[in-house]
Image (cartoon, rainbow, N blue to C red):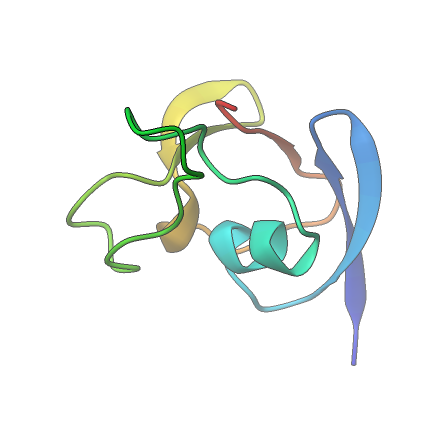
Length: 81
C-alpha cells in the first residue's frame, strides 16, 4: 500500500494514499474538529459534504471539507480544535 506524508497540525504523519483527509485524521487519532457545546469531541457526521461539520484548513484554505478531499503528498492540514 502506497503511503503519503501529510502534515497535521504541524506534525508529519504517514497515511495511505487514496483516503480522505477526514479518514486520515481519524487514522492518526487526531481530535477532530473541536468540541460540541457539551464538551465531547466532534467527529465526521455525514461523510458526504452535506453537514459541513468537518471543516478544516487545508494548505492554507479555510473551511475545506475534510470528508470531500483526498490526501495529497505534503498536504498541510490544521484542525479547528
